[in-house]
Length: 151
Image (cartoon, rainbow, N blue to C red):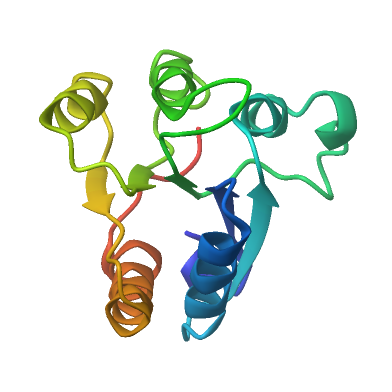
């Protein structure tokens, strides 16, 4: 486990809204768990990063993430397609994926779980609540949650 060896945890943040991305990045960096956040702004770049191709082919600079925070409403390839691809690709399917989106539509929630999302969180509207959510999310997924060792 990365936490025990002192190696940083790698988080892939897939978010096209720069203000939301900045809040997530700030919130995650405030955690006591060592982590590196890799931010991409669309679904196509997320898939390129996950499959380590194109601009993300350098495995040292762009390691597979330990955790993905994924918005649903993305340019190029939508978040549900990114999620479906992750959860149907053997070498990616164990990566926890948390949907972090502004959509509270029942159809989006249901489809996300149909595609095996690990969690679904609707972004709070106010800054204070959003900041607290990022802190709690970081503690849970990066600190307390048990993860299998890589194969």
